[in-house]
Length: 141
Image 1 (spheres, rainbow, N blue to C red):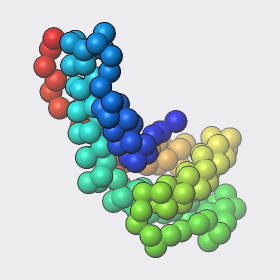
Image 2 (image 1 turned 45 degrees about the vertical axis):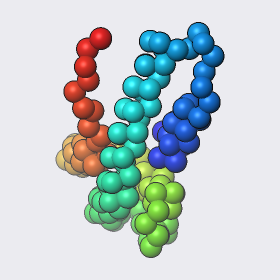
Image 3 (image 1 turned 60 degrees about the vertical axis):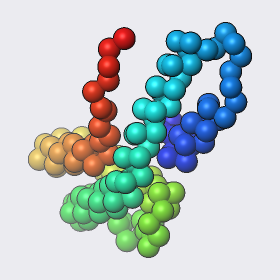
């Protein structure tokens, strides 16, 4: 499961909304606050770059599918799209184009199409880079 930005923020709220019992103070509370702070930092990065990353990723996947359409009999025009730039609408489209990409990758591997296989692997690297979240240096305890 990949939690969405709203899921993470609601979880942070629920984690910090009620004070814990006395046995959850001290080191436990410090750890809890640190974890919520880290999740908040990652959520801030996702809020800043998440929509743009999904738009770029969807475009890259569509281009790869369109390039392979003739050779692999793909129907790219029927894939969903959206003009909305909300994370949820972009994720719905992303799920559909990723499913199509997985199907293409399976067909490419079955045909032993090495050139296209390597192109898809390079696409995965770009996709991962678009979704990268940076962890800050954390103090040692």
